[in-house]
Length: 485
Length: 112
Image 1 (cartoon, chains in turn green, yellow):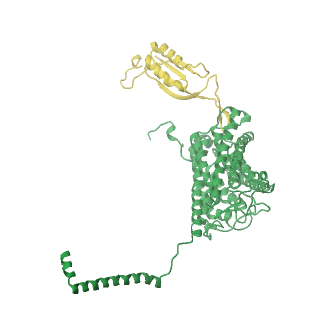
Image 2 (cartoon, one colour):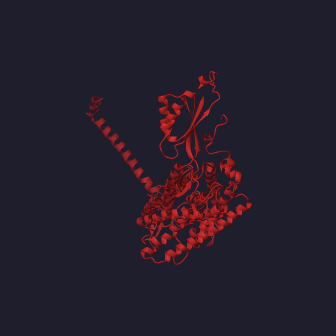
Image 3 (cartoon, helix red, strand yellow):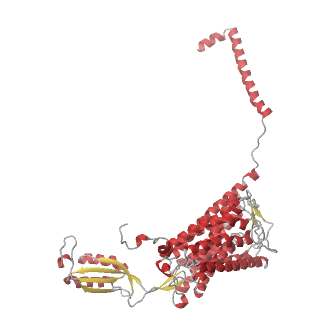
């Protein structure tokens, strides 16, 4: 082949043909390049990369809110475990089913009108929008978070409130009674009282000179839940056979400390969505970090405080009360977590651990049977946590915003030179909501009692709620085997 | 034939079984039970508050033996299960009218 080419190359005519063909091909390729460059320049439009500052903030904050919502929802399993563990085996199915059904019921009620009453605009007392989630904006308020993601987050919070209520009422509440009070708590008491503190035009949120501030719900979830729980325990009366300390008796021991303790730690885990998620903003990275740390330290301090407070009294290392102490610390830090320092969180937690023990003693003295300690943990420490903001707010932190922290707002407590202003706002808000919850709770529980559905019959209670209302024991293999299964 | 019924602390069961195995015994029946004698229960604590129980968990060991074996076995139980503290338990010895082995149908002392 090379020989043939060389032979042709020596012929000048062939050489001229070669150059012509080569020139033609190169010309063709040049024309092609011209077209490739020219046509788009003539017909096309320039496209630029999307503006970085706008496109990822809302998705990130929405994703953050949703992840937090999933964690808060997971607290339902923590509640189920804690309550079942602290109660007797004969009412275990009742507790588990009540938790599940209350969750389902709360979801529907919150969709139908709960979310609208709580987070819709209306007046200072109640919202009047978003019924059946109609007419919701794409993103909620100024948060930039997708409204339907915010809905899930708030539903998970609402679910916690009605679950807290059930804690003081285990062991003797009829299932229809459970359904009735869950319906009213999730559908009415919680959204209305919650609107006052968290609604866009809630009267406590708009108070002057200082607004009532409850970051993640020491008052809105825990005080409300704890007070209604107390109302329920009062209306029900103690379980049969329950003798109180002042009469020579004592509490009825829980049937499964394993599940109760694991449930406590699961609740602690879920609280990492409850508190940090309430920023609704991952862009406020310092905020979510600070809230997470404050939450942790309050839980640690609460647990140790309760443990070491109980030991000298009875020389017992008490697992149940330590669990309650951890939860008390978590409840207490829920309100102030954005605005206090880590050191302040520890002090808040230590006091919470002591308060939960003393409040349990108080219930024992008042002859009120609260099997899981719902009021000492949630009611009393919801109050303490709300008040503690007025004392321990450092004044360095404003409010979370979709792009970071809004420093234009100052929240300063008494111990940091802020005077009594915030403390008065906190006390006002908490006392009003607390009394409103207790009074409406008492009216609700006595109304359900009047229908005859609040407490089960004596035989039913002695048999155990599981056998009486749920078809059998939670642990059928532990019963004597009399038939071949 | 006699039945030795011994109420013992639950934690003594394994020690007792090993000792009886060494000295020889026909078999035993073990039942979980609760009860109290002079001690009348203990005080426990739940969530920081004390409560009293009337009954303590115990085990009931029943062994049906020939008359000749009664003293040896009941002495063995006393020796192993005594700790010196209140709540060690009691042994009751009663007469058995007859024993029948289900597998073979034999009865009397041979079936023990």
